[in-house]
Every structure is written in C-alpha cells, then in structure tokens.
Length: 79
Image (spheres, rainbow, N blue to C red):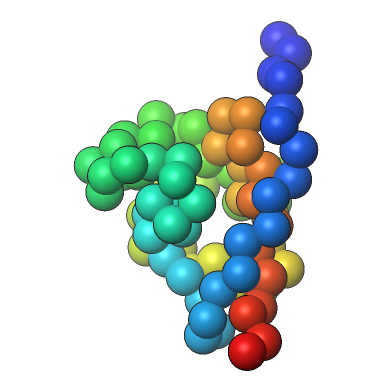
C-alpha cells in the first residue's frame, strides 16, 4: 500500500515535551481529544518507526511522529 505524504511539518514546542494526544490536537491532525485517542488506539500513530498506543507518551524535540499522511518533526521553541 502506498501512502501519499504531505511532507514534513515542523512543530515547535515550549518546555521539554508534549504529550502525544496533545501534539495531534496542536498540529491540527485531530480536532478533539477523543479523535486523537481513537487515532492512537487504532494504530494510526507512529513515533519514530514504532506504532505508539500510549496517549500520554512524552514527545520530545527531535522526535518524528507520523499519522496518516502527516509527518511531524518536533522542535524546541527557543524564544
């Protein structure tokens, strides 16, 4: 199966980490917490090369998250 990807989107976060479900909402991949939860529990979300089913997983700068056609590169917001 081939998946068309939109390219990598950089997401800048404040602090040391963001929880996976919050990242999906912050990046507008999920519009609600329930939608984020369903995507995670349905094995649609990868952190690195691994499927991630932990909603509260701490995503840190440098991590790559893929969900469907979206690829997110998490970066530190250095204001």
